[in-house]
Length: 310
Image (cartoon, rainbow, N blue to C red; front, side):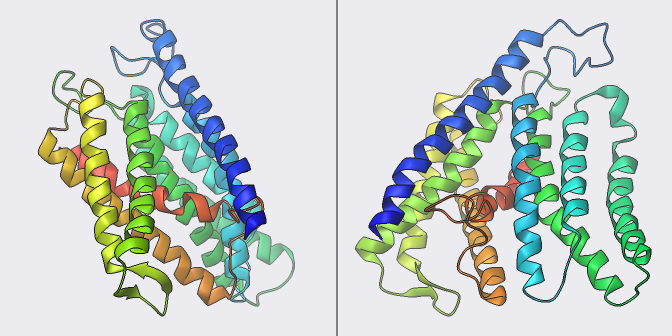
């Protein structure tokens, strides 16, 4: 336990510093390129700079690695996806999300997205056929696509939310680094609130057969914390998050915090099925990348929808 805590205290701040550095780079690039790309094919939405570059680099590094961890979980169930193909497909989905900010790409974005998914499946089939075998061809194709979509598909929403801009510059949603940070803060503070709330008040187990440490009291404390963090973010970053009134910010925090908890339970379900404690061992004290990014990634599609509605 002491070694695990020491690793968490060492690698936790390092990961946080790296994340903040990439997000700052993301924001800096957008500010510096604002109004300088008017005559370029990289001209994004009028009035905005090149968005999401730092976040795209971060996802291009993390998601292929996490996709291989997902493939490892599937392998425990005798479904052996092609890891390199799944990682490659995840990278293509990240690139696709980044390109959705450009008008020249937007009219073909849907077709290209479908093409990436089908292409990955076809490559998996060709890879299997190339070995002169037909056994488990369907399982390998399905496993490869699932590995790609579970992380690359969820990551698509996070980056697409960053680069998304409404035509209504005054009242519509405008993608910003602050919106991404808000999602991360809400999800992680939900975990913190749930942990300490469950430690102090927890009596009734939430799902004892899946996650024995979680309690209903802890969940309620986590959701309350998420609502407060959502309100605080909307107050501090009211210019960047101009679509969020105080009531919507509270609702946003509760919903995103709850979905983040579902993401944690979903990964717990897969790990128990695969009979492993952690998805990997790449980060001492934390386990695998999946153990860290599962909650915010599952929350990303819901956040994308909420910001579109708000």
